[in-house]
Length: 364
Ligand SMILES: NC(=O)c1ccc[n+]([C@@H]2O[C@H](COP(=O)([O-])OP(=O)(O)OC[C@H]3O[C@@H](n4cnc5c(N)ncnc54)[C@H](OP(=O)(O)O)[C@@H]3O)[C@@H](O)[C@H]2O)c1
Image 1 (cartoon, rainbow, N blue to C red):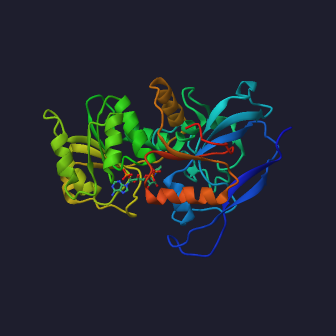
Image 2 (image 1 turned 30 degrees about the vertical axis):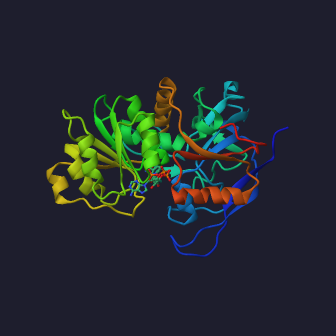
Image 3 (image 1 turned 60 degrees about the vertical axis):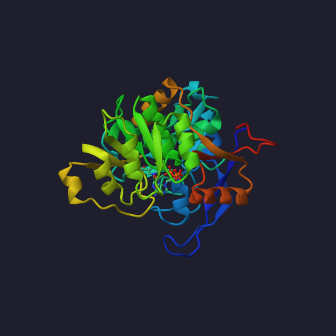
């Protein structure tokens, strides 16, 4: 029988200022509305966390919504289809588009309201629930080499890394020197995997020697600790003699990245900035103008980008790194602590919640 309600994890409102408040989470039961003609019902199997989910709890993300399921990344199986949807989708393992309002424009979202990421947002829905109604256009077949947890780890990190590296860096070209900062992060690690698959020379930074070692094991050419004040000088020494500067930097930290970039990049090099973990703005000094360093902001990506990224992942048999998984949606305290782990930054890759409670060890 078709399910009538979906258990969901949502934010509860408490008073507090931006950045000081930490909204609690709670489990609620949401009614599942009848399927519209163009929708499918997905039984969610796994949900990946993003830094964004930690920011929304602190009200550091625009337009936070209470009572709307958290999280934008999910994988699952289609268990019912609307009257206008092909039956071929029934029982298919799928990935859900993490945002709305961007179809295929190469530059930016077409929608007047801009791009809406799912999860405690005006999109009105999110993936941290048992069942989710999704427009047919927003489900994508899961690459078959991935398990559910790996597939859930892909949408936001993969899409953001795809647009940052493959489109906005203009340098996803064999032999180019690419620097990816903070490689332990979900997006950074995917960007590294894409850059390696594209044949680039990839260098990384991290706050942890262990994470640098793991990145090198996966194929990075070298790395430096961003906690060393002269990390940029150390990286320059690692570059090949015939190509002694970087072509592009993919950065999510901000801070003094443009000053560092002026030293690290060739004239006309590109810094793609996808986030500012260290603070809300970066300085763009005159010396960056003279060296014609481009500072390019990047957002997640369109439906077309998501399809292109999944094809690339499939063709290159890329597997996202799952750092740790927990299982079950009923233990709210466990999920609460798991979201809190994003703030500690100890993960290497993605944190994943497998929705069904598993006895004993997770399959990961
Ligand atoms: N523009 C978009 O559409 C978009 C999409 C997704 C994410 N983002 C943003 O991108 C950022 C990363 O997101 P995420 O989900 O990948 O987060 P995450 O998995 O929590 O990773 C954050 C990473 O930041 C790195 N970091 C911390 N301090 C650093 C520093 N001083 N220099 C360089 N790196 C530093 C850490 O790297 P180590 O662990 O290696 O030390 C950490 O792993 C967030 O600010 C997020 O809001 C933007």
